[in-house]
Image (cartoon, rainbow, N blue to C red):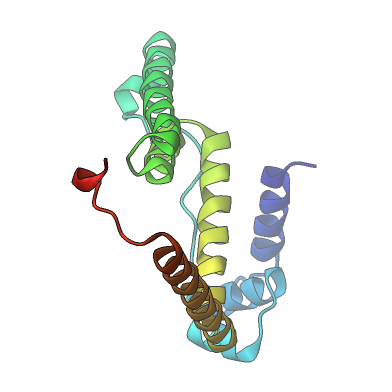
Amino acid sequence: MSAESDERGKGVAATASQPATGDVTASAEAGRDKAAPRGIAEAASAPAEEEPRLGSRAPEFIQRSRTLHLSWQVGVFVVGLAVVGAGAAMLVLPGPGWLVIFAGMAIWATEFVWAQIVLRWTKRKVTEAAQHALDPRVRRRNIILTTVGLILAGGLLAIYVWKFGIVMPWAID
């Protein structure tokens, strides 16, 4: 079963439970509570977020003509491929490789559903990683590991300088 049919099923269930009296807010909240149960603290602090619709974001006049829309999709794919390719090259060359790759994915996501799904998944994982990194226990562990690593690197550098000394490149015989 596809994700679209699951979402449609939730929408039908939510609208079927609405009363005919016109009280839209109470019935919408009841439908949301049935569709996605949350904790009390989370429900109070987090507003209901709607994700943007999936599909093409091309202008309406382009979507009306099949050949123009296909040309638009080919153009978006080629531009996105060029940006992703440049980002892949920047992984081994100087430059912000991952940032450019995600920018290429964002270009693809303006037109292709698969890219929109990948981009949503990536955003969700990055948000989870950022929240995990802000955990005090994780921050303390990272600070301790960084400090130990710097002490070890400094000790190895001191041993190297003690054993071989410092020779400037222009003073090499």
